[in-house]
Structures are given as structure tokens and as C-alpha cells.
Length: 238
Image 1 (tube, rainbow, N blue to C red):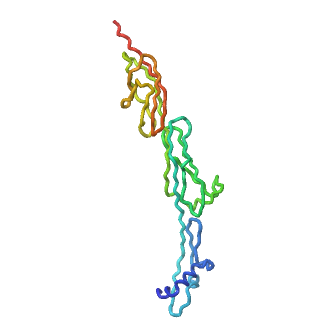
Image 2 (tube, helix red, strand yellow):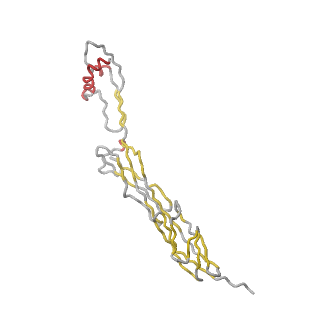
Image 3 (cartoon, rainbow, N blue to C red):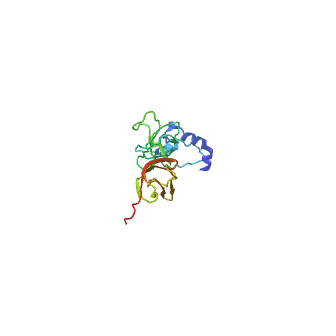
């Protein structure tokens, strides 16, 4: 067999590769293609050679085309709560298309309430709803790598406080922050007040003082006003 093959290999390969003989399995889209051959099919490509007696074992031919891998990237964004949706469409990218084929990447991530979520997406391929000039078919591609951004909103609410104090000393807790991590920095509009640990303390004049509290979280700041009322303690009755 080896001697016969070596003597006629180029002829056999040329014959089997001749599309006009119908012995090849062809495919374009990702799928599995099969073809069952007969002994007559194969013998037609085996040159006659009186020096060899050739037997033929027939089996089917299977061609498998797998989807090409795609990589999708979306961006991250963060803001303080303002009641409107947070979105981030710029910076999104999809790569991996072959033969200059195209599809449309649509970023659909949205976050409105405090918290975080993945900046998700969808892909529009040829013939699908919303498609226009896309040329890539969904069956021919598979997203194998995702680097998806995060949409995050943080929030906090200030409270008003009233104190009975002989000397104007006050101490009250920092606002509760709704975020995935701790605040980076607190700032107070009144320098008579300071942040110590998880509290705000200081000394204020009797009466009402308006204070603005600012929290900075991942380079994004939000401020809210509060009113601190200090009342002097009543003297004990004689």
C-alpha cells in the first residue's frame, strides 16, 4: 500500500480535490457537513497499476466548521444619584470578524437607583431585527471573551439635628452612604466641624447653622445640606 501510495500520491490527491468529481465536502457557514462515499467513488481516483492490487475501505467524510471567536468590551461609569439613568456607550468594541464581515454592537446597560450593574450589550447580525448593512451571520460567530464595564450609582441623604448643649458642642453620625465601597473623603462647609471616625463633631453657636456635607467616592462627589440647631440647656430649678 505504501509503495502504491508513494507512486501515485499526487494523482490521487489531485483527483480527490477535483470539485467536479463530487468527492469533496464543502461548506461556508459554521456547521457539520457529511458525505457518504461508495467504493466506485474512491476507485475512480485510484490509477490502474498492474504492479499492485488495491482494496478500498469506504467511510463517510465529515467537515466541521466552528464559529469564529469574538471579543466584546464595554466601558465603566459612575455618578452620584440624580434620578436619571446612567449609561456608557462610548469605548465599546467588538473584534474578531473575518473576511471584513460586520455586525452592530449595541450597549444596553443602564443603572438608575443606587448600586451597580454590568454594562451589558447585544449584537445585531445580518437579517435580525434592527439590522441594516450587517454582513455577518450569527451562526458563524461566538463571543468567547467579554470585558464588561460596571455602571455604579452612589447616594447618601443628610439629616437635620437638634442638640441641647451648654457650650455648643455637637456630635452626630456621618450620613449613611449607599455604595459598594467606603467613601474616599468627607468635606464640611463649616470649619468648626470635623470628621472623626464615623462621626462629625465640633462646637457651634446657639441657634441654627446650615452645613453642607460632601462625600467623594471614586472621584465623584455629591453634596447635601443639613441644619444643626443648638439649644442651650435650661438651668436646674431651685
